[in-house]
Image (tube, rainbow, N blue to C red; front, side):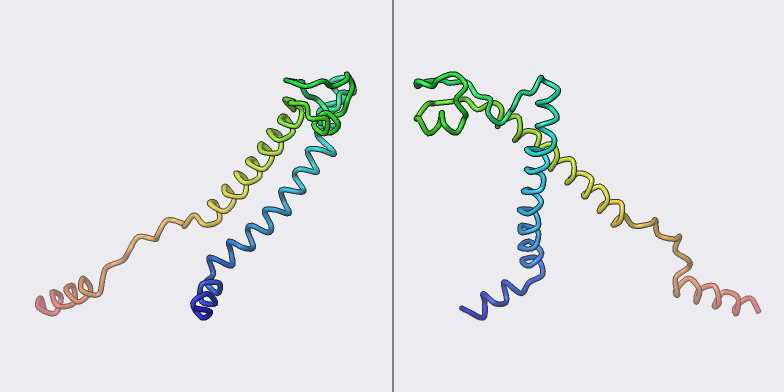
Length: 136
């Protein structure tokens, strides 16, 4: 059983998948940081200093106005965290766009040039030679 497992792991596709998952997780953290630390503060500034990460609506429970999202959740309030949702949508859009660009570049690279027109086959050449020899 160990040998089968070793053969399974040694296959190229499994190793490629593992590398892809690890790089994807690291890239996801970069995009999350880009969204949370760069894009959302700029968007918040455009909306008058609004911090989207703390924007929520209390659905049930008693929460004092101005309480942070984390404190509201810790107090047991049922909240609709629309600011976090907007950040997640922006994260997704950035990742989707980058994946689109990567796939587009890969497709362009892998696209084969059109095959050159095929010349006569060996059989065609031999037939022509035979016909020429018959004429003489």
